[in-house]
Length: 250
Image 1 (cartoon, helix red, strand yellow):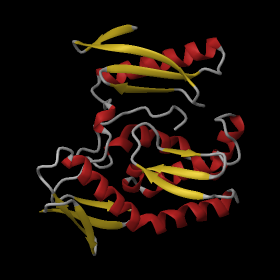
Image 2 (tube, rainbow, N blue to C red):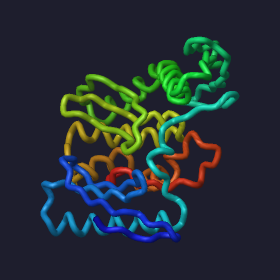
Image 3 (cartoon, helix red, strand yellow):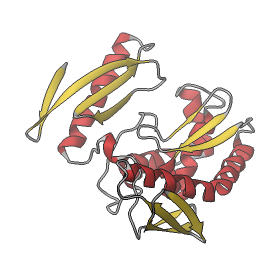
């Protein structure tokens, strides 16, 4: 395994061949992990892998690349967030057991302070509550874009607290969207929806795929740039400090 010194810190470089469709780079456990599809030709794997590694090093040098551990959604007492046009205020109260209720946008979480996984339990409860509250609007949004441009059969729409992907689309029309997308500008959310719906027509990120995305959303490149620079800080107080490279096609 190779390594590189960046800003007086040593990072291991881990190159892996994956079964995924896309190449990606991520920062995990103090290592830069570069993943490329095993099915790609050797020369293409090397060229794209080297390019991802260069971009990763540059982002770390500038202090703009966040580790995966910082991408799990977390919430604090008194925090106010806006998801798909709905305002939420998060309030913690003492309790012997964890629980949550939504009181007109005021999400009240019963917290057991002695629980070893307190923060994880809180985040899970708040995340599920917010998702449930906005799910009708999200499903309607996916359906509207689909009917207007794709007319594909969509079996399901789910929201997940993913740390490496903004979205995914299965072969049978199941759409998964990243939880943080509920907090980004709605035109950015629409871009990811368009991206995933385009996969109902073309599975790979080839020329025809991007032509389809471009017809539906001509400024998709601008949306992709915003997502790379700001997407992972959607729930953070500082909105301009993240620059994570999710799977390259986004």
